[in-house]
Image 1 (cartoon, rainbow, N blue to C red):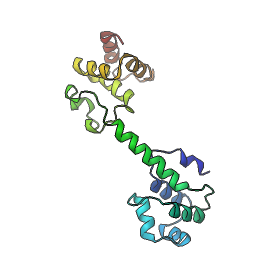
Image 2 (cartoon, helix red, strand yellow; image 1 turned 180 degrees about the horizontal axis):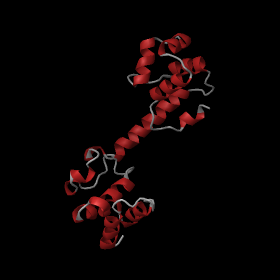
Image 3 (cartoon, one colour; image 1 turned 90 degrees about the vertical axis):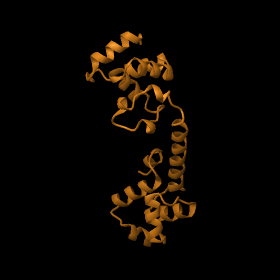
Image 4 (cartoon, rainbow, N blue to C red; image 1 turned 30 degrees about the vertical axis):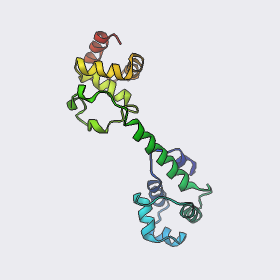
Length: 173
């Protein structure tokens, strides 16, 4: 039952604790009493102001009858690794001076993880981008990755299909 949470690397341990408490219909005060942890500390864990220690994890595991040793510590570690990887990936960017912010109007261009969002970026460039933007995306990802991203677009996604196809032909992707 609890194993599924261990694979959620993009979710902080505090959010998992909050979800479990809600699912078990327990308040923060109740779990604080059951685990002999100060209520403020429970709140700090949930809000991510404090990290789980082996002791806190063990107390909560016992109070919640979670049979996985180091459950919250493992989730915390997975999340920390995810955040580190994300931080490193965000350092790898195309030449942003060649991309207009308007191309990514629905997000902050500085916040895009260009590695994890490759399919989104390629689709957006081929649907709305100009020549310079599309060339930069091809240069950054390479023809193979761009072709894979374009081929991954569902056939039911017909929005801007003509623009996408025209640009595929123009750039021979």
